[in-house]
Length: 621
Ligand SMILES: Cc1cc2nc3c(=O)[nH]c(=O)nc-3n(C[C@H](O)[C@H](O)[C@H](O)COP(=O)(O)OP(=O)(O)OC[C@H]3O[C@@H](n4cnc5c(N)ncnc54)[C@H](O)[C@@H]3O)c2cc1C
Ligand SMILES: C[S@@+](CC[C@H](N)C(=O)[O-])C[C@H]1O[C@@H](n2cnc3c(N)ncnc32)[C@H](O)[C@@H]1O
Image (cartoon, rainbow, N blue to C red):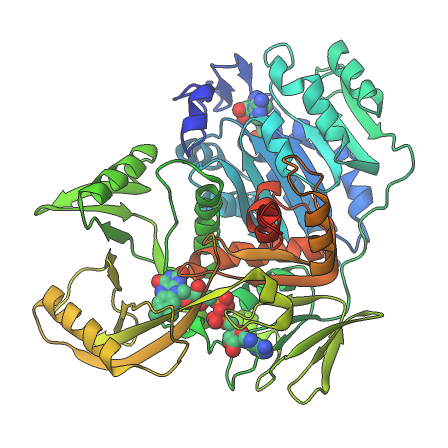
């Protein structure tokens, strides 16, 4: 380990594992004094102890719904890849995904991952390993969502298992206990961990592990599992399987909704939701008030993708770092780097402090001719139309369709247009309407921030990264133009270009470049902002129920979780100036909510549309 685990609470990164290799090319951990797997027959052993023991083949044949596996100890992800390979071989139904959730305290670094998988012989496994390598995150703590194929998602939670288990909030179907052996790593197998696991089980949840230690057997039994010893692999005589004994059988997840899911709004937020729903084989009907899709703020032709990072790790920055990496993976964005210049001494210090948390290949502080700047090395820009072209092609899209009213019906929600006529009815509706405030969204108190950009052409510029010092200048796009953005106005919501804004941008750019350029067009968008600058993503509360809850819980610090959300009504907006970074992961989060799949608990609280009223409850008269 390059860093003591305890130090991590002060940083953004989870410390990497120290890995040593034996003469056969198998990894082991000097810190735990244990091997990652049986050096001679790692793959076969894992298939026996985890895949076969949980009867995955039998359970997946003809399965039409998603399946969730929870693993303690991601290591090199070999279990994950083997499970993914089996899912690809067995699962032929288009509905549902394999959600492989894995917890890891000391992730292996990318060179170690590459070293291990370079020796692979199996082509199917090789393809999955290369997806993992290409998409492997920088080890920022928290939850990373990584698609290994169209219908296999790895949810990698980087953190200590006891804490990380709190991030999982839906029942899982199978559990792999693959920490190092209990004798060498007691902490991983303690009672608190086993008892947390039991809260994530339903009547059909199975568990397996290679250890048959007495303490583990007692712990699992106490936690509600019935256990059985099975023949181990190779020279190991025994291993353990377990079945959760639910007192009353808990309901197993419902089938994914079959009817189209309605998304109102065709900006990056709506499209991100659509893309994630499509991965689950679900149909989408998208309603857009404008003549064309992507007509709101998402139409600005270059949007920067880079994370929000505070000088102290806070939940929003941790979310932002995961969402940033997700956006890069998902959108085939144009990676170019993002240089943020400091505008004063205080900012120099702030950038230096942020820089101290991260490796240089991720974030790097530099100084050039008296100018200090931070480079986000893997930052990118994206054009929403390009990034979501395939998603759009697969959607049923109705343009010129403004939704003005939403009413609950027997089967879900009825949506109405301006003349009061019904547009459609759906069990699940996502409001991705940007700043436009429908009556139902008014209690969110959304705000606007109008922005204008100019698209310019010049042959005098060489830099290929995004440069931001107050305003942002992008690298050239395919058409030979580039965006210079943006103005800010909280007063106006006019979507027409404003000549004085254009003038302001042009003279600033002239000063910056000192050479002429041609203005090709002016682009305007209205950003939707929230009180705490964090997006609002999730189930929409029943406002009446929430008001009642707030009255009942006034002046109480600790309260039971509010549960009065509308069934099948969701919101995904409030992205401010960071839609390109945060919307893709937010769309995935909503798809998981709709499909009743595990979602990161911390994201739920952070993005919760009920949060403003909950925070304000003590202020009410
Ligand atoms: C000049 C400028 C520069 C920016 N630069 C960046 C940047 O570099 N990086 C970045 O990440 N972000 C940037 N942003 C912000 C970014 O554009 C937004 O965060 C993002 O586009 C928001 O996407 P959205 O889908 O939530 O909203 P929108 O793109 O506004 O989409 C909402 C859609 O909903 C439709 N709609 C609304 N109400 C209804 C209704 N009742 N019925 C039917 N349809 C409806 C609208 O017509 C619209 O198409 C910038 C914004 C501006 C203005
Ligand atoms: C045997 S390896 C896992 C191998 C892995 N399943 C694979 O297929 O590649 C055990 C892993 O558990 C991790 N680990 C140990 N203690 C942990 C803890 N308390 N919380 C989370 N992970 C832990 C180790 O860092 C190590 O990567």
